[in-house]
Structures are given as structure tokens and as C-alpha cells.
Amino acid sequence: MTVAVSDGAAFRRVLDGLGLAIVGGDVPPGSDDTVDRIVERTGASRSVVREATRVLVSLGMLTAGRRVGLRVRPRDEWDLLDPQVIRWRLESPDREAQLADLLGLRLVVELEAAARAAAHSTPRETAELRATAQALAGATAARDRDGFFEADRRFHGTVLRLAGNAMLARLAGVVDEALRERVPDDHLRWSVASSGVELHSAVADAIAAGDSDGAARLMRRIVDPGASTRAPQGRAHRVAMVESPPGMGGSSASVSAPIDE
Image 1 (cartoon, rainbow, N blue to C red):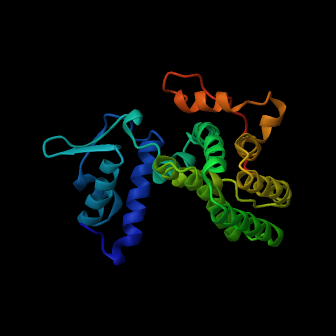
Image 2: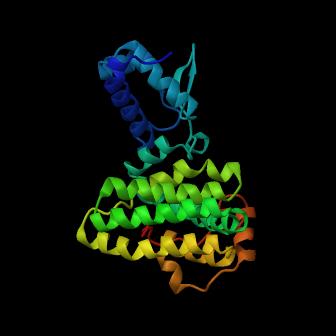
């Protein structure tokens, strides 16, 4: 069932309201609810509420049954890689934990993607990446927030795609949410972004030159500016991180304040 266009605003309001209530802990795991009660609370139609709860079921946040109605599931059963869930966490008291999770994921994924892109990319593909870096520089010079985000997400998404691994490419939406948080909105952050533009161009050059270690090292400086104060890590360590990511039996990556230049 698809919500009618005229009900789109109501659907988004109900979905965001329910999602934020679950993520924020206002409705803890194990809590029961019904479509009728949600209709009464929100004033939305049954069709809108049903569609919203279907989305939450698909995200692993709710279960639905004829006898038990709707029940909130524990967080470890949610689809935490879904951009929608990430946005809700960023708007909740769980924001700092979500930012740390995003940084940890990017340190594992984007460094290896840059290294793999350097090994697999064609001249045409690296020309595309360089053009995207130039677009990012142009948006930064113009202080164009929309243009900055679009160029930045294209750049990082292209690196993931050029890694030659379909599963890595699927993480572009997750990275987008991290980048959305880093769009400059004041003079200081635009100044920081200006210095970061050169790093994006340097990553593109390293990938074009087939320099896997250099591409990964430069990507780390973009993802985690604090990395320059720590000992450099070679390719062997990056591979170990991919094989044993945080929370899956391996040691967690070091995490500092997440600022994307």
C-alpha cells in the first residue's frame, strides 16, 4: 500500500514522531501499542498510520501481530545502517553515540575503500573523481551549502564505488548522513572546510597514481583530523580492521571528535 501524495506530510509527521519516540527511549523496548491508539494520538488516518508502522516494522523497530498489536523491539534488532534510523538517532539523546558510531564505521570502511580504489580505478573513473573534488572546491569558495554537500557526497560515494565492492558501495547512504552533519554553517567551519578541499584533491591524485597507502592515509585525515597526532597505520592494520570491525570480535578503532573537512 502506498500513501497518497496528499497524505505525504501526515505520513512523514507520524513516521518521524514514532521513530523519534522509539529511538529517544520515550517508548522503550517491549512497549505495546495499537494502530487505533496511534490514530487517536496523532489525528492521522488509519491508512497513514498503517503505512508508517509498516516502515517501522521493515526497519526492525516494531513487530506487528493480530493478537499482540504493535510492540517495540530492542535496539540491537533495528536496521542501524538505514539512513532514516541514523537521522532519528542524530536528533535524539543518542546523538553523540551515533556520531561516534559513524566515525568508527568510516574509519574502517573509507580508508580501505580509498586503498582499493587506487588499485582498481581506470583513468576515466579517476577523472570523474578529480572533477568532483574541483566541484567541492568551487562550492567551498562560493560558500554554497547545498553545492558543498552534493559535491562532498558524490566524492565519498564515488570512492566507495571505485573500490570495486558492491557491499561497500551500498554504504554510501550511511556516509551521506555523516557528511550532512559536517556541512559548514559559519565562518570558522567554512575556513576548516577550505583546508579540507586540498585533502580531497590529494586523495583523488593518490587514487589516480595507484598509491593505495597514500590514498588511505589522506582519507584518514579527512575522516578523522585527529589522526595526525597518532602513529600512522599501514595497510596491514587496515585489513585487520576490516576483518575484525568494532563489535564483531575485534578491537575497536580509536575515535575522536568527528569533524569532516
